[in-house]
Length: 460
Ligand SMILES: Nc1nc2c(ncn2[C@@H]2O[C@H](COP(=O)(O)OP(=O)(O)OP(=O)(O)O)[C@@H](O)[C@H]2O)c(=O)[nH]1
Ligand SMILES: [Mg+2]
Image (cartoon, rainbow, N blue to C red; front, side):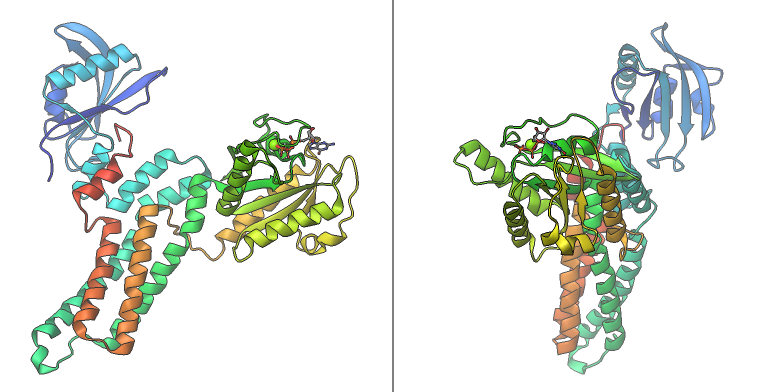
């Protein structure tokens, strides 16, 4: 249902700034602002996409000198009439203008309501609307590029095309059901098989790209692990270039996980310093160690830190323990030998790592070879990117729907192969259509819309 109300909100963040923007959208947007805006000409006479300078007055009292832009339906962000008031960023002025808007019949916008209206008016599909939120939140060049691709249409277009073809088939198949007595076949099974295969490949690749998409959106998780006192926190600080974690020569200093993000060549990494892994009776420390393993499980890259000053067999044991834990995963393990300023270590046991370029000798304390770790992270990212097309899924809602659509598509493929009855195939196609349609919003419910838009900021 499209609302008839006119909504308003401050679109800029609170706090100190030169200028603030107040947005108004709805059928009455222009006439509402015209009640208290005094410019050369009445706002209601202004053409779309024009800017007017003037005063805002409240009962003859001057509130501010402002610039007002007018956008007329349908050529606006929401598709409705819209006005944007650029005022001075005083909280008093902003509140006075909001009060005037409310007194003249506007209501306060809900979070994301402008974008929701844009969606309901067909300006954006649902996945594009969700990308708007990602653009606002993007911190790195990679996350920004991904969000823009999605907002520009990204995979919606491809999914819609496939969906249309499927719709065509399902209508033919359902027509067959009407003639079930007569044993006719309107839908060419070979073509349907081909389409199902194409659909499966597309969906599968999109779903597979989520691992990268999610990592890029939240920062690629890099866990720093190792025995107590090897210099994990020192390395975290060296990577971040700030004293984030406490460093001391007491083993067991870090008891909880310390995290921070850092952007390298446009890609964000989330470094996770963990509690050193050892046998301990200390309850709090063992809780910390438990968390270390959880962080290992969630990381894409693991930096196993060993100290050149430590006993060699202990170091080999630490490596084996970690390798055992992560076998059968596709995590990248880098072996980092620290404290090389103090002592040289025998690296014979680490030959496979050295040969693959996955062993780096550093001194965290003196910042030596930290750049080699950073380079290695970047080449890992480039490796992750290979095999993914430009279009990357980063939204978990889309990922879950794609996985469901993938399963339904597999059922269509198997069903066609096994020659199962037409009504079952039609059911599977309907299910795939439903999941795909839910991504772009061709199919949506109020609940879905509510949960998506409530995560937006007010004013967007
Ligand atoms: N000589 C030398 N000392 C280092 C180096 N890196 C760290 N250290 C010292 O090693 C000690 C332990 O460093 P931390 O960074 O606290 O070690 P950690 O691995 O975080 O230790 P836990 O949190 O207890 O598990 C400190 O005294 C550091 O100054 C290094 O590259 N060379
Ligand atoms: Mg530490």
